[in-house]
Length: 228
Image 1 (cartoon, rainbow, N blue to C red):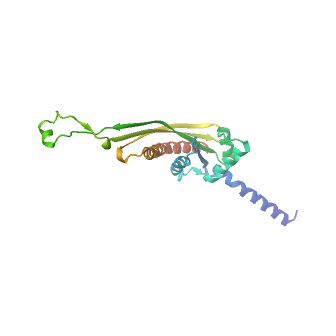
Image 2 (image 1 turned 60 degrees about the vertical axis):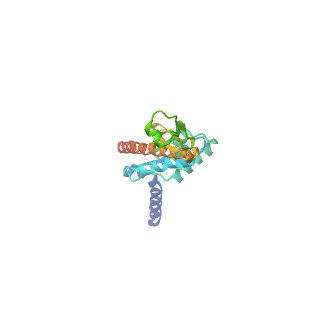
Image 3 (image 1 turned 45 degrees about the horizontal axis):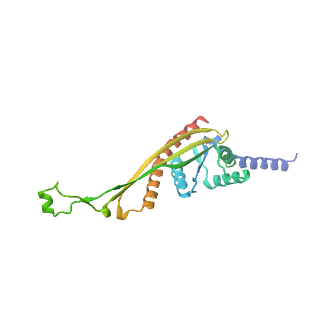
């Protein structure tokens, strides 16, 4: 075999090697490739799913033994897998296969749900008598209610459940649920139920996800250490 043929063969070997290298980088440098997929829920609220994803991403970025896969790459793999199966059912098998396509070792998946919501009115009462009469006989007056000065109290509890899935086996390696209460008190004349509920929802989701982010980071770090 001539030297030019040998050089050509060597060149092709190098090309194949470097094409495979990105998918096996986690094994060589001790890092694991991780992706995040959060269920948007029955109402398809992308804002809350993105909020959870962003907080979890911030918790994982900068961790030496975790490589976070670009979200667009994972989303493309998930959509492609759903199309291939001809349905919109996102189960463990679908997740695992999409993760393999995206070159992952683990997928963080989960969902959020509202556990409770309570609205309460705190009435405002006043004494209509003149101040001098109130001072002289403070307990004898008849109180009256001013509904315009009532206070509206709203409280919500949201729960987030996260799981870490081993892409190779489809096994759930870790699962954790956390919930948080968020409440507020607003004067009735400034009260907007929809806006207040949305604000509390975001507060509850953010607080819960921040706690879960540290827990998930520690679990993945241990998984990466054990894989070395």
